[in-house]
Length: 228
Ligand SMILES: *Cc1c(COP(=O)(O)O)cnc(C)c1O
Image (cartoon, rainbow, N blue to C red; front, side, top):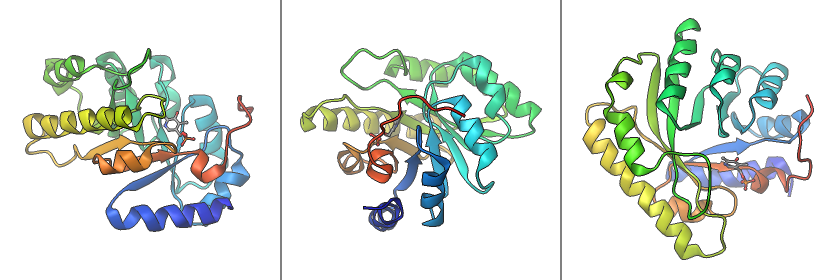
């Protein structure tokens, strides 16, 4: 299947049920991205800042770029004036840095809190207690140039569907709880980003309204390292 027909098939599947498709284009060429763009896709996600900024410069300006990979505080400045959603916020310190650069760019930057749900060692993501602590912190109230729009999670890399479902279910419960407790009067908290190529159907069953698909659209990633 071609990239453009994959986009069409996925958009026909996801748009009617209110699920937003993020095309994860890491390691993929500008030509591949343009093929998806010409099929109507406008939201793309990358996991590395350097690759993201190079593609943002080279490609059409009406593309909305999302960052889905770990973000170091010293790299926020490279993306602050154009990024449309950061999925991978995992500390107050990072939020403060994003806020600082958003203020300089005269923007409000939309962010998701990345929650650690997988049953495996991972350096990234907040656990439940840390999410709540962050949401309750006074420092957060001072950050006027960021907007927390929801949660993101990555399930375990396993073929056991029961485990994956439980992890997504757990994140949905946390999402609902946070929404009613901390965002009752704030409709901007509405995104639940969960599901990748291997597990997005399970994620949608459990309540995802944003999925991040790479290989389903572009094929397997063969190149490991992007060169600008
Ligand atoms: C690479 C990546 C994806 C997409 O992975 P596929 O399995 O190719 O769909 C989704 N989310 C994150 C955070 C990623 O790094």
